[in-house]
Length: 63
Image 1 (tube, rainbow, N blue to C red):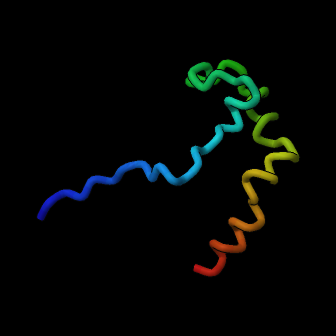
Image 2 (cartoon, one colour; image 1 turned 180 degrees about the vertical axis):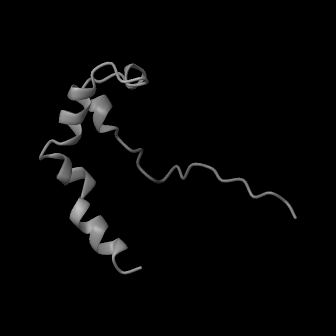
């Protein structure tokens, strides 16, 4: 059996990283230099706009 290669679907838009949009260098987060700043970033109210936690929980609750 041949191994199927999975490639990037070029017709799909790329995912914009919210950390990068905030000017946070992803390499600085490993290990986290400022844990409190990262926690505050994760706890922002506007994260619900791009994470949709209620919709995710609703979808997963059907399984």
